[in-house]
Image (cartoon, rainbow, N blue to C red; front, side):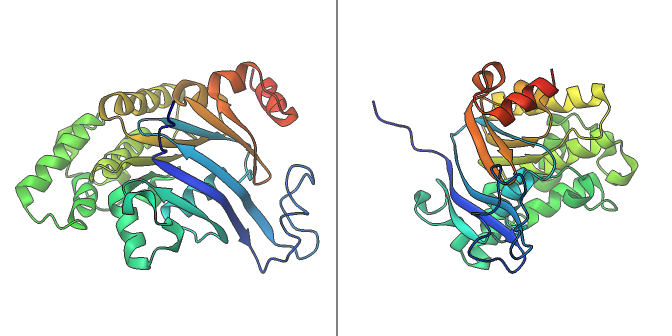
Length: 280
């Protein structure tokens, strides 16, 4: 039986903050219990991270603070430059070209056309003093759409899809609740129909009822649009609800990866067992 090619593949992604040395990777990680190199003091945010995401799949990355999960998203989206590693996305040069090696112009294309990012802090993903409609319009303008009526109509459709009242299209997100700001972020990320959406701790700091609405929205978007997603969270409850497969990270490394239900019901690695038992 032929294997279905992955929509997104990341190979051996490594990000080191600091000068780095030839011992950084060997002297850090779960076996060392730290991600700071004892020889040179550099921080190994992540190392040798490899994963694949299929079309229409929600892939979860879970781990404690400092495990490196957000760094993976930031490198993929282009907020940070990886130290080494490769990434391939099927719609980009038919999956043959390394995203990380692309020119700045092509990286900008990847960021604006092929990926959508929803940050933990809405202030990173939105212009808080622009209207919610203008935030979406900004995303559309970068792909060359200049038709006011068409842009306005697209903004309205996206806000309605993400449960933001159209009556508030001309209000700035700074006037919105945290949950509504996140929904505007999601609407903006969807504007150009990217094949992959990246979610970084999108429910952190939200009330439980608001969290539930945001999670329901993400599940509904996946069902209706069949867009692939990577969801990063420290909360196993979020990962259980959303992800079909999950990678567990600690000290910058993936320590376990597999079907979410299998990982949560029968974790194989000691750290995963500790993580699951701590959140039961």
